[in-house]
Image (cartoon, rainbow, N blue to C red):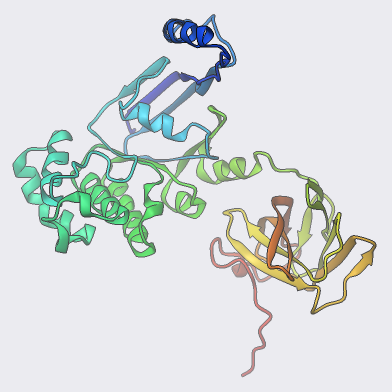
Length: 412
């Protein structure tokens, strides 16, 4: 049975937000404020550790987080911007201290949280490899044995003896990840830094993390790329406003993340300063279920304060990993719209829609095609599921095979 290498109990972190002070209008008042403000700030600082004294300036980045990570486990940490993901990783990396709670970590930790973390700009890439390795507790002999492999993986061998201050952000990410992954830490913590690298390097990184996990080491991975999280991790936690709302298998975590803030109705209405967008989606079955191969109807109505000469309306269908699967575009100059004053109505019917079984949502775009101006976009609305009913060719439905079945014609 795998042993626990990370144990987090009732972890909380709070910050004191800066508040706008009342500006004095007189010279005497300004002088008084200069004397008074430092004492007020000192008082607030002392109150940070007093849980009974809170006001509007207190912000909880994390609140009562509990989870365990086993040896060799790859844990995905999912959440929207501001959910507390980076704060959690900084605490686990011992960059910042928690306000309360307990953390137990067994093993050497390597962290890659920001571009070029721990690099000295005046030192060369080679010198930074040795410095980072030493910080991670490696001996010079251990670093020597891995040096060529690190340089080769990073792809910056041409510039390895150039000061890091001349590196691009992408080069810093490549070298930083290569050092962290090759110096064999027991625990590897990675934030959303891979988004800076190019596609080819991202794929190399994902492959390397799979190798690291396969060697029995533990990985904590934060990313907004849900496909990467699903491919790489087997367990995940979902954070929302500093609170852990899910801890379990990754597929369930992705669904929990996508459902946060989602309206489950097939009818949606958005109130925007430039107009109102109404969406009505009609599935072939009740309870937001659409049968594979049946027609899907989408009706979009836009109400505007002003009459547009050439409006454009588009929608996309996204899968559960936020990949765009279908895109349909209608432009006023190409197709007749139904008009009622400043109200436009379009209807799209997708005959024999052959989406693979799974969960989907809509994203609606509305623009003035005459001035090439985007007016409004609404995302993650009208969720529906595609199910197969009565189909006999079961080998069609292999997980991950595809998302759309083409209406191709075969001949022999």
